[in-house]
Each structure stands twice: as structure tokens, then as C-alpha cells.
Length: 115
Length: 113
Image 1 (tube, rainbow over the protein chains, first blue to last red):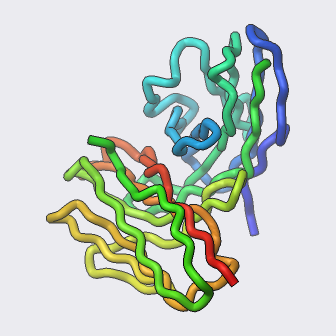
Image 2: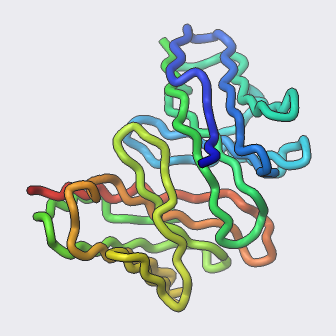
């Protein structure tokens, strides 16, 4: 069964450092997303991406965040200067289409710990 | 008012019990509704979509009341393997202006032997 894969599974970084979280969406999917979940809290939308550009972003997704699809398969989330409060599980997701009831498939997540 | 509101639980039930989860959402223009399941420290996985007519998948039944902005999930004959957090999720708006998923905080279910 096709799946969304994310690397690394766990990333520890020092405050102020840049991190890049990587995702390989399902190959025939066209819409890509990043979500995050702070420990003990709900899953929160960060950004959606289609046709090589951001289609929507949340208030959380400030200038410290960026996304890129550098080639035909990878989808990355970069945090330029990490803060302690960026510590969370980051989930990548992809979907085939942009219509009602289309399932979004989630990767297994990258746990980011900022120290 | 929170966008998607759920009772956080935990719900502790014996095996074989019937358990019901409820959820309310604030945006009347919301278009799509789902129940996701999340195991501890894992990714959310789609359990079922929720339709106005109600839908059933084996032991699971979902209902949507658009007038009350209320979604429910019923699990019959609960199994130990049903233990997880159940996430109420709302997506999109009429006209398709957004496709982001809005998650509730989830309801923790613990099925006891």
C-alpha cells in the first residue's frame, strides 16, 4: 500500500539552528500539507502546497518557516532558527485531489526536540 | 468558541461495551467531516468520513447533524484494539476555499479486558 514517508523520525537540535524535515508524498498525489502536534495538544494545520506554491498557511507558519518541493518526489519543511516552542511532532500529508471527502494520508511524523 | 470541540475523556469501558463520542464544530460553512484515529505517538489515520445521511462501517456508525453542527461516532462491541484517541476532523468550506483539516483535541478511549 502506498504511504507517505518522513525522515528523520526524531531530530534533536539546538535553539537557533536550522532544521529541514523531509517527506516523500504518495507518488500520484498533487496536494501536500504540513501539520504539527505539540505534545498533549491537538493536531494543527501549518501549510498546504499545490502546483509548486503555497495555497494556504496558518498563523503559525511565519517567516521562520518555508516549504519546498526541490525535485519530483521530496517535500520539505524548513525552520530557519528554531525556538524551544517549535518542539513538536511534525506530520506531512498528501492527498490526491482538492474536493470534499478526499482522504489525506499522513506520514509517521518527525519528532522535533529543540534544546 | 473552539473550531472543533470534543470531550477529551478518557472513556474507560469494558470489552464489548458500546461507546459514543460527540463533537461540535463552529463553522457552519464546513463541507467535509471525518473521524480519525490516533494511536499513542503515531500519525492520525482516517477511520471514516461522515455523511449527512449517516454511515456505518462494521461496528462503527457516524452521524452528522448540520443544523446542530454536531457529529457523532458510535462504536459497538468494543475491542481492546479500539483503544486510541478518536479525532473529530472538519475540512473545507462550501465553494472549496480551503482544504485544510481542522482537528479537535481528541477523545481518549481505553477499552479494559
